[in-house]
Image (cartoon, rainbow, N blue to C red):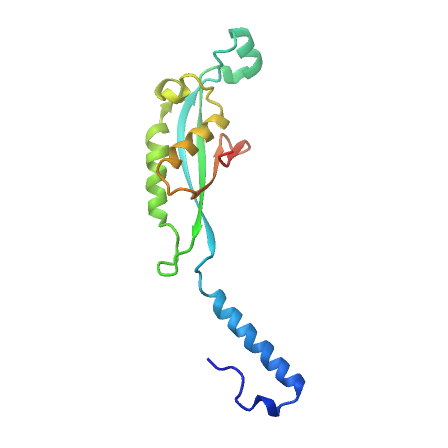
Length: 171
């Protein structure tokens, strides 16, 4: 695509510089249309219900009641989990991951093992780990890491309520 006229030398310097600047802007815009090498972030949210009781085996009953308060009793939450993955956009498909693929990974890693379960009784992971939202985020991260392409998982955000949430980035 030729933007500058063939007889550009006949124009005054200022007009030649403007023409050159326009040509460079046009080329830059066209190059930016190509998604190759661009990284995108894809997020999906799922909701599940689960029960738990905050209690540490390292503490006695009185210490657990003092530390965890009313959460030391069995109770449940409608958890909301947002998973964010990242990857380089494929110039042919225009995406780096199909949303339905992420949905399937989340179903296998989150919904099937956690929905309508008692975290402390139904998951061996929480046999020796306190079922806090922090540890739930770590559990979800570890489960997703086993299924997703390496380096793809960016962030797991777990809402215990509308006002309380944990963000875990694998560190």
